[in-house]
Image 1: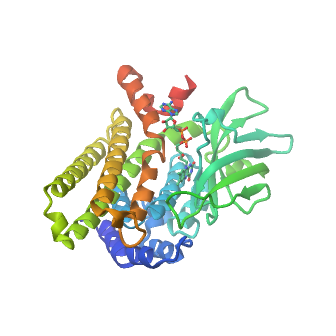
Image 2: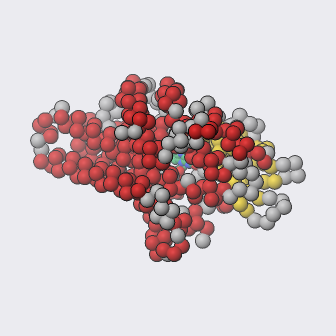
Image 3: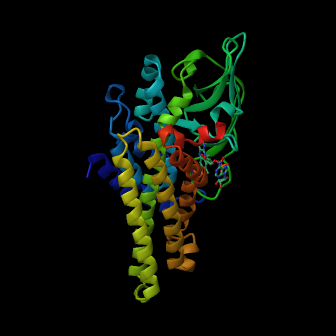
Length: 383
Ligand SMILES: Cc1cc2nc3c(=O)[nH]c(=O)nc-3n(C[C@H](O)[C@H](O)[C@H](O)COP(=O)(O)OP(=O)(O)OC[C@H]3O[C@@H](n4cnc5c(N)ncnc54)[C@H](O)[C@@H]3O)c2cc1C
C-alpha cells in the first residue's frame, strides 16, 4: 500500500475515530484533526512539488479520501473543497497566482473553501452571483447557499458570472476572495442532518470590490473549462468517499454481529449482510474501473459520473441494511452506525444530485458524438 494512504489509515485509527467518539455534541471545529492533516501534508496532495505539495497522482489522492472517509466525512468535505481550488489554480492560474497561493495552500496555512452551487441554477452563466465591471474596477455581488468550511476558511473561491462593459455577453470566472474583506458576509452555520464539525454556511457578497489579480487566470480565463475539467475528479472523489464509508459501516456491522452470536446465527441476518457486502464489492469494482479510465479523456467523465451514482446509491442501501441489522441500537446515538449513516446520505446529492447526473449520462449515451463533456449537467441545463 502507498505510504500516504497507510499514514492516513493510521491517522484515522489513532486520531480521527477516537476524536469522533469522545467529542461533545454538536462537535466543535476539529482543530486537532485539521492540524494532523497539515502534518501529514494532506493539504498539498496533488499540488506540484515546486509549490511545496506532495504531487501525488489521482489514484493515490482517491485512496487517501477513501481512508479518510472511514473516519469522518466532514474532513473529506473540507479537504475536497480545498484541493478543488488548488486544481483551479494549477489549471488556469497565472504564474503569480500560483506562487502566491499554492505554497501556503500546500502546507495548510491557507485553507480554501469552494463557493459554487446555487439552488435551481445549474449553469454558472445564469448564477445570481456576478462580477460586474464598474468605472472604478470590479464588484462581486450575490449569494451562495452552502459553502463548506466558510466559517474557518482563509480563502473562498467563488464561481461567478462575469459581465464586462467592454465585451458583449456573459462568461464564467472564479474569483479568490479573502473572507475578511469588506462586503463579504459569512452567514450562520446551517442546521442540518449530518456533516457536522466543519461549518456549512451561506456566503453573501454585497458589491465586494475586487481586482483583476483576484480572478483565477485573469479576466478572460474560461472558468467553465476549469470547472468542467475538475468535474470527473470530483465525481470520482465522492465515489471513493462512498466506498470508504461502506467499508466502515460493514466493519461496524461485523463487529456488532460478532458480539451478538445469537443474532449472527439467523439465516436472514446472514443474507442481509451478504447482500450489503456484495454491493460493497461491486462499488469497489466500479470505482476501480472508473479510475482505470482517468487517462482516457473520451471516457473519464462518463465513467466517473457512473461510479459516483452507483457507489453513493449502493452506500445508501448498505447504510439502511446496517441500521436494520443493529435494530434499535443502530438508531441510538451511542457507538453504533447512526452518525455515519446520517453523514453518508449527503453523498448522493453532494457534487450533483443523482437524477441530474443520470439525466446527463442518458443525454451523452444518446448523443455519443457530442463527446465526454455532454455528461455535464450545466450544458444540459443551458440547451
Ligand atoms: C453538507 C453539504 C455541503 C455542501 N457544500 C458545498 C460547498 O462547499 N460548495 C458548494 O458550492 N455547494 C455545496 N453544497 C451544495 C451541493 O453541492 C448541492 O446541494 C448539490 O449540488 C445539489 O444541488 P441542489 O441542492 O441545488 O439540488 P438540485 O440540483 O436542485 O436537485 C434537487 C432534486 O431535484 C431533482 N432534479 C432537479 N433537476 C433535475 C434534472 N434536470 N434532472 C433530474 N432531476 C432533477 C432531482 O430529484 C434532485 O435530487 C453542499 C451541500 C451539502 C448538503
